[in-house]
Amino acid sequence: MATGLINDPSLIRSYRSEINDAVENLRNQMRRTEDAISTVSQGWKDAQFQQFQENFGKDKELILPLCKVLETYRDDILYRLEENMNQYLCQSMIRLN
Image 1 (cartoon, rainbow, N blue to C red):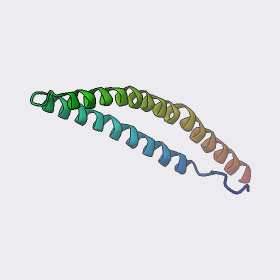
Image 2 (cartoon, rainbow, N blue to C red):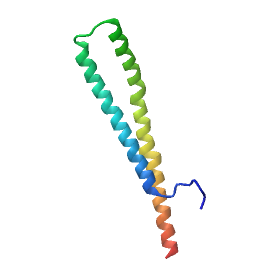
Image 3 (tube, rainbow, N blue to C red):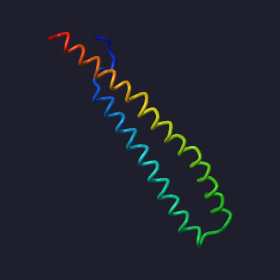
Image 4 (spheres, rainbow, N blue to C red):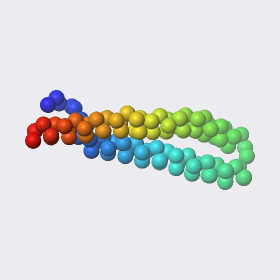
């Protein structure tokens, strides 16, 4: 068997789960930050806060699309890879019997 080859579908499943957790954490952190900004904005209205708010908006414009890309990678590419591995392993087991 080739070295460095992933031949265990559970590793792919675990990686998919890690991606899911990362995306969920990013989204939760974005919501918490938005809530904090909303709370702070009621008392802090100087230029420094405006700059922070603008920078956060720019970061958000990058992070949310990244979440979508990661979800697509998880749901399309990795899911199909995991399924193909499962099918291959099942066929190999059938041939051995």
